[in-house]
Image 1: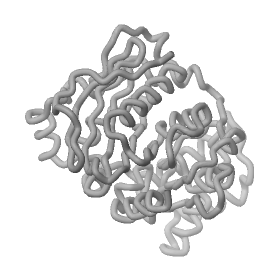
Image 2: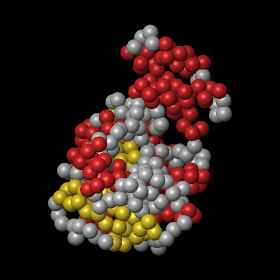
Image 3: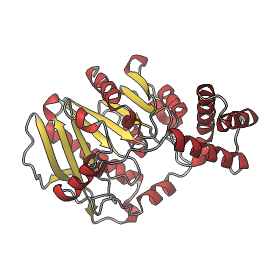
Length: 338
C-alpha cells in the first residue's frame, strides 16, 4: 500500500493560524517536496495540482504566476507540491515509475499527510490544466477522499484530435463575437466563412491545419499566459530554501504520460464524480475551451445546486490570471457551502 510519510519538517510543527511550511512526503520510492502557506486555522486546505504534466507547482507559486494564491492564502491554507520527475522531487525511481498509477498514489499520500498534519475540516482538490486530468482520475479512484473539486481549464482528454469539435466551436464563437465588436476586420470575416463551410473538421485534413492556424491567431490577439514579475523571480532564486535553478525540467514525465494515456477520453466517466464542484474556464482559452468546460459541467453527477461553471471574462488558459478576485470569491463561495 502506498504510504505517505512526512520528512524533514523545516518549519517545525504546524500551528493554528498562519503557516509557511516546507516539508517532504515519501510515496513509495519518491520523495516529494510540499509547501503549505496560508491560514491553517480556517479549517480548509486547498491542495493544488499543477499543469504540465511537468509544471513545478511550488516554483509557480514562488514566482507569482498563480495570481490567486497570495490573496486566497489569507482565507485558507494552500498546499503545493512537485510531482515525481519534476522540480525538486527526488527518490529512487525510474521512468517506468512515471505512470498515472504512481502519480495518483503520490497525490493520495500527500492528501493523507495534509489531513494528519493540519487536521482540516475540509480538503478541496484544485487542478489546473493537466491537474484536471490527475484530479478527475483521483476522484474516480477515491470518491470520498476530499470534500470538493475545482478543475481549472482541466485536461479531460489526451490527444489533439479529440479536441477538434470543441476548438472548432470555440473559434467560430470568438470569430462571431469579434466580427460584431470590430466589423470590417478581414480575419474575423474569413474565420466565419470558414466556419460556415466546415461544420465538421476531420483529423489529418487541411481543415484541421487551418483550424490550428486560426487558434494561433486568437491566442496571439486575445489569449497569452502570465509572466512572472522580476522581483518574485529573484527572491525565489536567492531568498528561498527551494532550488529554483533546477526546477524547470521534465525528466520524461510528459512523454511517458502522453504515451500511456494517448487517445484517452475521461468525459464518459465523469458521471462518477458527485462532489461539490467549481468548473473554471477562460473566455479565450484556445487549449481547453469554454465549450469543453460546459460539457464537463454537464457530465459530472453533482447536484445542480452544488456545482457551478465560472467563465472568466478575458481569461485564457490561466483564467485566474485575468480575474484573481472573481476566481477567489467563487472558490470561497464553494467552500462556504461545504
